[in-house]
Image 1 (cartoon, one colour):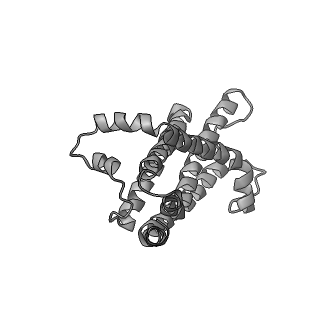
Image 2 (cartoon, rainbow, N blue to C red):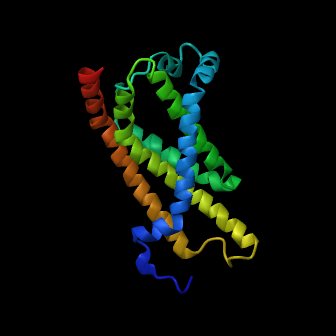
Image 3 (tube, one colour):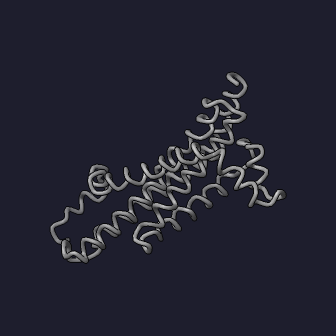
Length: 208
């Protein structure tokens, strides 16, 4: 990409233009997953409870959602970073694995919201999910954007619409996005441990 203006490599507008529509697709898939998880919660929950051992932590979570369980910033951060890098491998399946991952994770969030709604108000649930969830959802939607765009580039290359599947400039773009995502995930983990519980407790004590 000899004519590429490398001064745009850190431009937000550059990423919005080149990755924006793919980000919106990823975010839309995640939101559809959330809606599907909530809508099918009453049907999915019995199935999940039947296949999960009664002694498992997951079964206990489904029986009584405890949003105030002790976690650490590092454990949440490491878990999310691992999930993010695994989701980047979605390009191997032509982006289908990334889309499926976004949909399933969205459904999991929707299912948790459904379970929590049996005991908590919508205000409380939102206060426990949104402070850190906005950053996490944005981060994983960026992962989807990368893999979907890359798949689109492969298709274009096979159709002869571009000379190479990926250029040096685009590799650097992806590395920049990854660095931004890692920072977002760390901030989200810190918020989840240090801010979200306080907000949740305040809402529960004053509005539940």
